[in-house]
Length: 407
Image: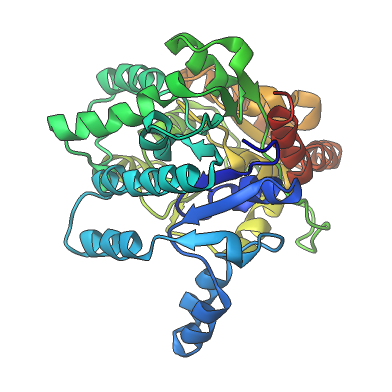
């Protein structure tokens, strides 16, 4: 096999802003990128008469630097996915079933071009276990913690808080669904190298039995914008949570901590959630000085970060938590748990504050402390922005390429 053989990369959506296939392309190593929908020039031309909201979403489905000739879309899978959504199938099961199509397509491409594989964990199993006329390198990007660790952590929390149902993402417990889940659980066993975005994700793989020498942490990045014109936050304690309102993000823990903490009278907590568990929504409605927003565009979200004293998301289990970097980039200090990327980003001097995962009392104590330390603190806000500047997408791509060049 030629030493210059490229890699097939596959995933749905805009995963990691297309930085992995871009990293491959910049190194001359991208054979093909397989995805669900991409803004080819022809597709954009056909969409000229579509609503502006659709055109905006479509425009985001591309990345400068990735040649469209190297992108393949599984349009039939995309149409089937949307059809299942409209028919009322649980989205989680739909994704589990259709993710296999990306893996099969990657396997066929790798076999025909004698290429290597760099696949995200939901799309790796079929391609990793397939037979080939050559010996491809199998590189796995494990972007969620290992499913067994996640199941254990969430299961313990379910015992403590059984009313949290996450009805918006229900899954089928049938044997068929269990088989589909096993694909992602065991893909690492067939990988030559494993990429993880955080030390926490790496630790979950080591707990499952992975060889530490094969696991590499490459932290995500962000483009830090110029300082905006939102002005300094007020001297009041204003917190913001951004994410899905379910068990994994620890929103119920945050609301319980907010209820228990002794905070200044004018303290406010804004929750930005496109979807939210019904019981958590009820808790939010019963908690004083809490406002629920069903979704914000990025400009409005950036202004909210810039005007807030603290971003807080006490996740139970998080592969990384890109939203922490988004807040830091706007000069907003962050509070999260040890089960996220935060221990990798910095310390309290950089505006990165930690609470023990699943410890409501510790979250409450931290809220009380930070309500006194953060409002009006321009120094810590400058440090937060400087922290974000240390984590660039260029450094992320360099890290990917460094792993690939090491063998």
